[in-house]
Amino acid sequence: MISDIDLEQLAEIELQKEEEQEHRHGYRPDRPPAPQRVIFSQDTSHPYYDVARHGILQVTGDDNYGRKLVIFSSCLMPPSHQLDHQRLLEYLKFTLDQHVESDYTVVYFHHGLRSNNKPSLRWLRDAYREFDRKYKKNLKALYVVHPTQFIRIIWNIFKPIISHKFGKKLTYVNYLAELKDHLNFDHLIIPPDVLRHDERLQAAQKEGPPTAAKTPPPRPPLPTQQFGVSLQYIREKNQAVVIPPVMSQTVSYLKDKGLQTEGIFRRSARVQLIKDVQKLYNQGKPVMFEQYGDVHVPAVILKTFLRELPEPLLTYPLYNHIQGIIQVESSLRVTACKRMIEKLPEQNYIVLKYLLCFLHMVSLQSVVNKMSPSNLACVFAVNLSWPPRGSVSLTALTPLNIFTEILIEHYPTVFSTRHPAAQVLP
Image (tube, rainbow, N blue to C red; front, side):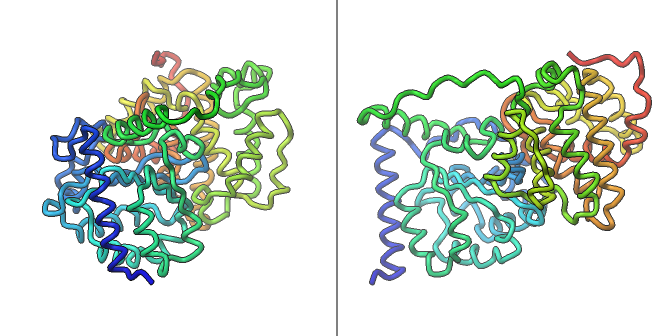
């Protein structure tokens, strides 16, 4: 029987082989890092600024099933002598503590883990034990991107202490394109080194034996399409109805059945079930939520609809304005928010008002459902606004949450009569 010590030595050998192979192909791990499009934490008052400033951990929008995305990038880990791994563990827990009450997904970018920056096997064991049931219960998926033989050896070392249930959450992803089936790929925070590594892997694959035919171009949307098409498209295909049917139906059902459900919008539903419901909507077939017996199904469908809009409901031009809310004096923020949303196109304004009226109604039942304006904002902010390129960074998340919380809590004031002379953003 191979001992853990033998496996650890084998893992070390594999890691060294991987580094030597990259070196032969011209990759220099000791070169200065390329400029990253990830916005690292600039808040020097952050309790874990010494770790957060590296950008190793990012919390971004939701996956395709309404679960918060947590991204860990190995290539952003500095050499071990420059990073206190105990502090890293504490920072991981500090960050996850803000999200583990809801369902969440972890994406682990393995590329860039090297002998000079990898944590010890003992640290990995301690980390797994530190993340007790509170963290593992609501973790719904763990995607390991660009796995190597090193990863598989480490997995064998940990098999005796990893539960079967936890093991089923693990998915190996060999190429970034494979993530598109599970995540909103355009919103992922992917370090440039990982992107380049993926390009090298794809190039090497193309040089190999012939593979399947090229993917056919996407089909045009159906006339009954609800997901992944614009508000204008839905309106044109539904006799000028302003509120998309998927929104009016989910909101109507949740008003009747979900207002007193604890943690509404913080739980996911079965992946295949969500896909089936989306398909029904896109084909113009009736959806009867009563038959599913799970109030979280329409809740996830509502979030999914918002997230799959080609342009966010709050529009791209408004994104930078929202980011500025944090600079506005607290007593003036409600008025500032009102002015901002009055710049929205008419249809966006009406749909947003409809949604926020409902979310305000949910928040009024927070004693029972535990969904205060703040909690609702944490769920909906990233589904209402995101930048034209890239994803919402950890730094940008705070003003988004503040803005959304104000819209929910102060709905009657923010959505009072719209000023007729409001200038709509282009």
